[in-house]
Length: 273
Image 1 (cartoon, rainbow, N blue to C red):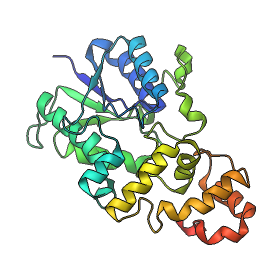
Image 2 (cartoon, rainbow, N blue to C red):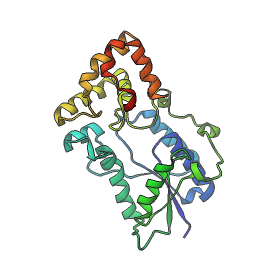
Image 3 (cartoon, rainbow, N blue to C red):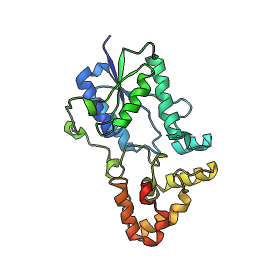
Image 4 (spheres, rainbow, N blue to C red):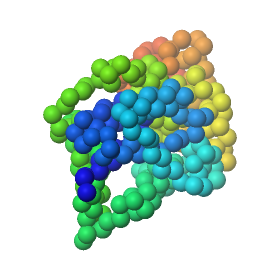
C-alpha cells in the first residue's frame, strides 16, 4: 500500500502550500485534505472559496471531519452550551470540540494506531514553518506518542512553492484585515482581534457580550468585552484607528496609547502584549 499523506487543511495559506507540496511528492491519489468545516457565520465565504479552488486545482476532494453534534455551531454558541470558553487551561473549548476531537475520531476510524503498534500507512502533514520549532515539537510528540508519524513540509522539505498565487489562485480576501484564516471572533485572540470584531462584525461582538454575561467569565483574560466598548468606540469613531489584526501588536497599541492617552488604563501594558 502506498503511503497516504493527510494534510491538516485549515483553509489558511500555509495549509494550502502544504497541500500542493504533498500532491507533488505523493501524488493526488495518495493525499487526503482533511478539513473541519466551520459555520459560515464565523468562517468567511472567501476562505471556503479558497479551500475549494485549491482542492480542485490539485484534483483532490476535501474530506470533512466534524463532530456530528456540534458541526453547525459557532464557537460562541458552543461555549454558551458548555458554560465555558476553555476546555482546559490553555485550550479553547471550540478547538477541542470543533477540531481536536473530530480529528481524533477520524484518525481512529480510518487509521487506528497506538504507541506499541504505530500506523505505517500514513503521515500527518502540518503547515508549521521553521520559525515555529516549539509548536512542531509539541505536535510531533503528541501524535507520535499515540502511534502517528508527522511531517512539516514548510519547515523541512525542499520547497517547490512559496506563494499560492504561483498557481493562479488568490489568497482569501480576509488576509487584508485578519492575521490568520481563523474564525472571526476567535476565542484565543486578544484585544487587537476583538477591536476588529467590534468594528467589522458587530453581530459577533454582540454574541460575545451575551456569551460572557451568560457564562460569567471573560474571553480576554482580565477584562470583559463590555468594559472595552467605550475605548473601542473612541478608537473607531473619534481617533479613526484602522481595524486591522495584522502587523505588530505592540506597535498597534502604541499608536492607540498615543492617540488616546486618557484611556491608557483600558489598554494592555507592554508586559501583557
